[in-house]
Every structure is written in structure tokens, then in C-alpha cells.
Length: 129
Ligand SMILES: [Zn+2]
Image (cartoon, rainbow, N blue to C red; front, side, top):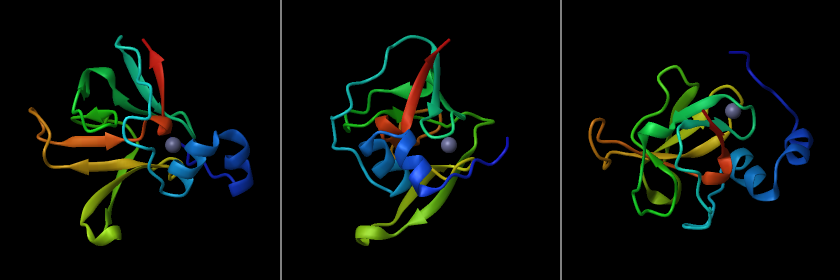
């Protein structure tokens, strides 16, 4: 998948203020602020570059206030960095195609992976099957 590189001004023009803040400046949407996604089969794409990142069938209700998944798409361009901001050791999740910040992954999820990808809703675009 080709890398997507745009200027700050281009991202700002393309994205909503909140999506821009979250994806390009490592922001976090307010817990419970995202209105949710349709519960029909489909795929979650990167709001910035449209790469497919998560499948609907890995989404689960975590009640943490953000869309949550047990795994990223197997062939999706999802990358990880260690995030030590705010005196916490967390694993940051981003789109490797365009470097959009997506959220974090925590080791307290349900089977089969035991992982909880805690992802900002504004960083995703749902595409029904
Ligand atoms: Zn992307």
C-alpha cells in the first residue's frame, strides 16, 4: 500500500477539526462523545487515507467510551509505538500508511486475543459490506 503524505494544511482542509486534532496531533475525543457506528457487517477505514484497519466482527462493547476491537485487520497497515506521556506506559496505535494516530491498545480485552484496541471514533470511517 502506497504511503500517503500530505502537508499539515492539506490534512486540516480534509478533516473535521476534531478528526484533525486526534489523528494529526495525537488527540483524544471525549469518552462517550462518538455517536457510534451501524451494527452491520463492514470495515472500519482510516479517516485520513481510507486504508481498511478494523473489521466489524472484531468490534466489541467495552463500555470504556470509545469504539473497541480485539484485533486489527490482519493485512491492515496498523503500527505501534510506545507512549510514555502522562506518566503512563501505553501502546499507541496508528495507521502506518498515513501516520494517523488512532488510539491505544491495552492487554485487558476479551478472547480470542485478550487485547482491547481503544480507538477514537473520529479516526475511523465505517464502510458497510
Ligand atoms: Zn491512514
